[in-house]
Length: 124
Image (cartoon, rainbow, N blue to C red):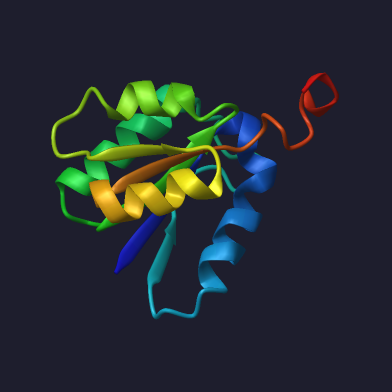
């Protein structure tokens, strides 16, 4: 399976962790890192950009699955749901991931990559 990782500007420091987690599955998947990589001088992508990139690569059949997200996961969700050919799930906790894989079997998921992971953690 070809999997794209698409992260945006506010979550670029989490990009390597997402890629590493997917690679650690050792399932033979091809991982394509299409989002922000926290590299100096790269253009700053927002959730609108990453949503469009995700829908584009899915509809072109360049990848089979997209793992994306933004600060809360909801901005990315709102963008990708505007495009045809995207079957989406917002994964907030492990139960969401299990149910999404059992019931929906879509091709795109979003994670909250900042909320509860440093930014605002003291408020929850």
